[in-house]
Image 1 (cartoon, helix red, strand yellow):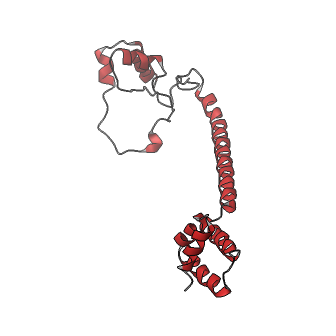
Image 2 (cartoon, rainbow, N blue to C red):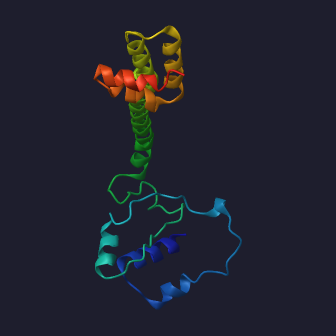
Image 3 (cartoon, rainbow, N blue to C red):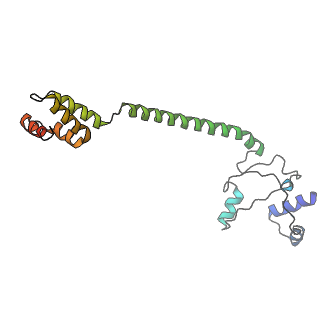
Length: 185
């Protein structure tokens, strides 16, 4: 095991002798076993100086050197930000807590918006029934109409809002009276 760490150190330090390559030759692939895989340590691409150096040299591939879990250098390893992996893990619950509070704030904002929309909708009345009501009230105030004539015109107001709107738009009494005579029957 100590020999593997020495080989990894040589690779990191840039010494490339041919013996190292022979040692690193991998055996034929075996079936994948997750339990035998090294632990995953998340890092942000592009934050380490090695990555920046490779990018400057034109190598866009993102390669990460992972030490075996039994390596003495893997214990207390630092992430790309310089903090220990353990401290990054301890900040994870805080991050989830922050996300939770942000979601709660968003939910509260949606609830307030929903309340405003409902309040506005409850005060909004369909204008057509209001216009029909106004026309019927105005029609009853017309002088010289008999009850059966008023009822006949109300039936027309109920069936066609255009008649209602036209009646309300006519301001001159004599023209409005001529208009109504078309609907007495």
